[in-house]
Image 1: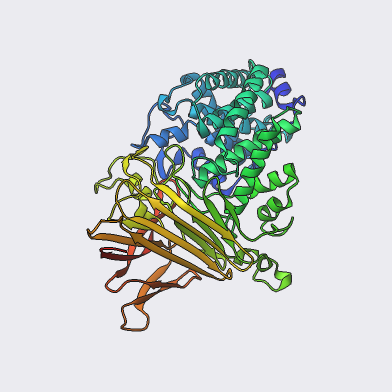
Image 2: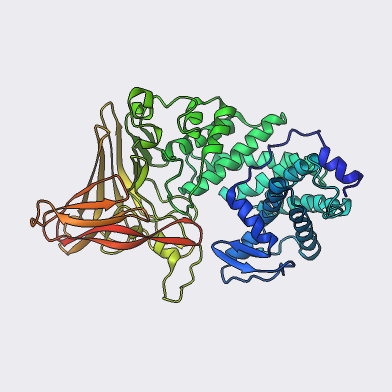
Length: 571
């Protein structure tokens, strides 16, 4: 039963707090598993019983223990309590938190550079919000779990929050997303837990450093500098959370930062597919931007963000169907905006065509893939050409000698051209690479009847130059033209292979068009709405290979890849 300290903590009204996090089916599933002693993280499940050994990692992947120590389980258990009223969830949450606080010190996972502490703080603040709601419903007192949550536990927890926030603030990464996540956790703790030691100083320091870091981390067109859609989403959600919480509590932020955060959410809106998912550029898992866009639409009074966040049911569509993001090098092409209006006789919001052309630079950090000039396509309600995603951060070879980290980063794993069997940028290790491939001669036209993008890529790994032109003809047909040209004086033979990655769960076959000609090939797919016609040089090999797609870390699914390979001298 909570005493005076707990009652004051859980009923404090001195701060305008964020809304409690919303439970998902996956969170409730996880809560049930942890209640039974089973822990499923990064695709691996282990039975740890009622009293886990917090210092032991049952997995060979360090990401498993990192995920465990972020304390998502605590938030999920409290979601389980609120969803069911079952006091076993509360008792389990209190027991696990108490044993962790007693046995574990701050900074246990040294390799994380205080990233684990930062995300654990976020989980703890979310747990506190849920605990306040449970207290308001009378779920903390009485019944079998009476006494599970007492003042001693809550005081130790809040003191640890202050200690860990200070630890994070003194162990900041020098740049980019990790620094942002760390500073956000410090800001969140200082604002939402004013009882934590040093809370006011934590807020002031976090605001000062966040303003500087986010303005460096977000390009002027709103794209995150690491060129990975998943990390863009994480940073956008973090930045919007800071802006929203600051506005609620009258904490001043630099207007330039607010404009940059607004631009960041606009890129989120443009990259979102009509079905609400996102293309998995770089190190990415699938993500849902709806909550981000609805929140940003309200904060910035932007009906275009609301339109995408509500999937066309509120707000209004953009004034133009296509948009270029020149600082990053991305272009999004869509069909006529009337197609999103069923009342106008169109096919509806989710059946719009969405093309993303990646003529971006490699991006800062190690989250980008070797995918210059790649194209992804969503049409008629489903993905048609996809990026395979991230799958893993582990660079260790599996039992078959495969480095899956490299496999998912390769040029061949993307919808672009591989020259001489080499990546555009050399892979050195899980987080290191050779000289960046360079995109040049980039030109974009967004017009009344159609759009096009043209660019070339130079690589230190081979001498020929790959040029690609993407034309969205009358916003109905997508034409992609590739040229691989050796440098003057280069008379050697080179190979070029173009790949088109299809979604998991579909099938594909290749046939000559016209039959027996061998010159033009049509790809027949089942499970996607798109038809593909390949015009290839005589003698080119066109085939369907086995590939992989991963929309969730640690989980991969087989998916077909259409490949066309040609060899020769000259163009």
